[in-house]
Length: 111
Image (tube, rainbow, N blue to C red; front, side):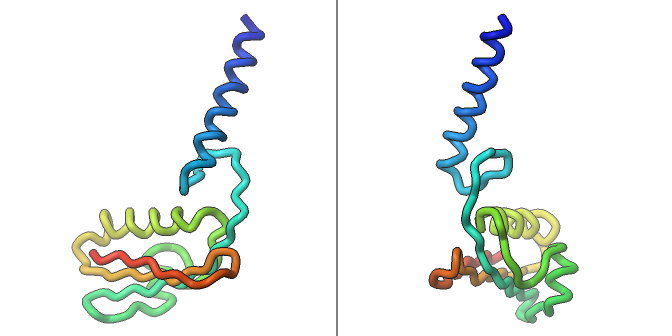
């Protein structure tokens, strides 16, 4: 019985790691994630751009910085905020980011 429990435990862990390697978001994975993304967030509320302090106050993260996990975590966080707390504020969010120092890309969210 004990042997079955130990084998089952490690088999489940292996399966979780295998699945996690195929997804963008790795919140609960034991998978190393070797991407570092440098980002800058630009937010406009009713056509007016927010200052760095206003962005920090709104999202509780800096306007520019580094994401040591998947950049999808940042996109997910911003999307969730705008779909809940900011849903009535007519915000436009743009993130310029670079993964591992490569070419910059742009992600946008229009609320």
